[in-house]
Image 1 (cartoon, rainbow over the protein chains, first blue to last red):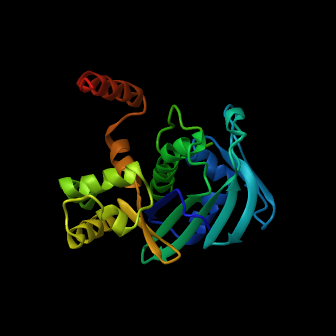
Image 2: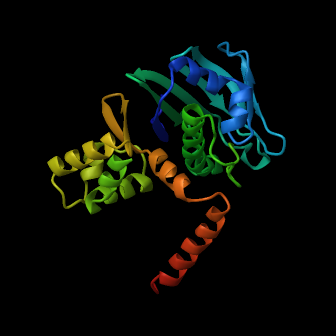
Image 3: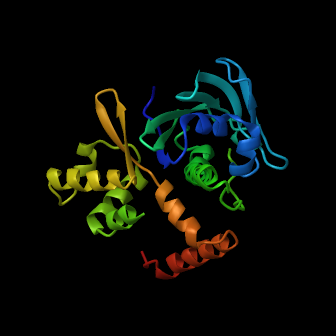
Length: 150
Length: 104
């Protein structure tokens, strides 16, 4: 793989199974991912798609699906102004660490000067902080005004 | 959270985070370039930043790359900043930056 543009880590008090579910179930993502619902059968090669009532959402193809340890998918931004940018890749690594779970999110193959890169650098910390809060307390962080996931 | 504040309470460590913010994914050698710190000091500071989860490392072939991990900082922000304040705070920061900008 190319040198990733971003590597994010968060430690969450949960189980790998719950975290996997939170990453792959639309009812869950809708709550902590600021309204974006994800859907797929999560088989390698299958499509997945985020949907949001009012915002463009990313979609792509499942690359790795090894529950509850590793998930990877391509990331195709759907906003009109981002169409020209190349398809990037997101990888989630889930590792139990005693009573917590270490989640590493790696995003690579991003266009260096693209808008996706800038959006991502604001988006992931927000989504991951919200995911952590959601799994640990049952409440996501308050919805942000901006931050289209794409 | 104490770890994060302790890690941030040091100018050298903040400057390492600044360097990663400017360019993410650097090796130890790259991070040491042009710094008035010994390699050992940089290694020590990076270990403290990593323990606080402000820096994360990634193995890429033979290289160990360092990445800025802003997730804990974001959590601190969320604790005291309400959602409707964010826009105003951004505007204030921008105003301060503009006013304090030195004449080139």
